[in-house]
Image 1 (cartoon, protein in one colour):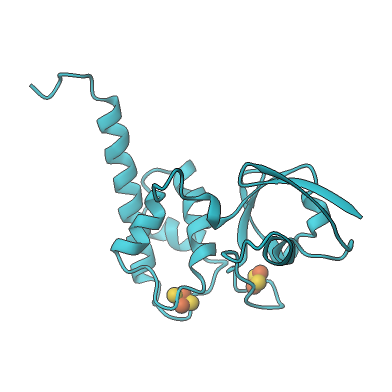
Image 2 (cartoon, rainbow, N blue to C red):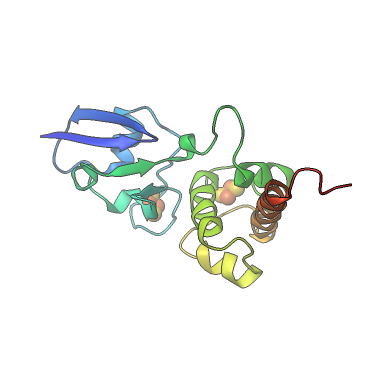
Length: 167
Ligand code: FES
Ligand code: FES
């Protein structure tokens, strides 16, 4: 069957088997290997991408179900060479060790900060509760998301400040 979808703003069409999962479509058909595949049980969350703006486990979605819809992957976070604040937060606050869970964590964190610009620790832990990190103990992941939230708030208030208001 043929499937067409938008991935990171680009329209893609491929001939696929109807049983192909979105995670395999992204990795094997499009070469977007930033989305990882970590289990066969829908437990690890390393495969999280966005589907029409909502984070989903792409191992639970058939590629055919994404037809006509918008997919965003970790490769779509950076814009014009500028890292997304969540990427920068993970880098600065050591939110990763092996990095295997990181793409999914980043996509979930981005979605969280889009709806809540100042999440507390419990909210962050709940948001990532469907994802497993085998390395960090989660503390630095929480810290990374909080760093990103603050960076975003600071940037928004700097943008809102009227020109010349510093004098
Ligand atoms: S690959 Fe583990 S939840 Fe999707
Ligand atoms: S950094 Fe290794 S699994 Fe999370």
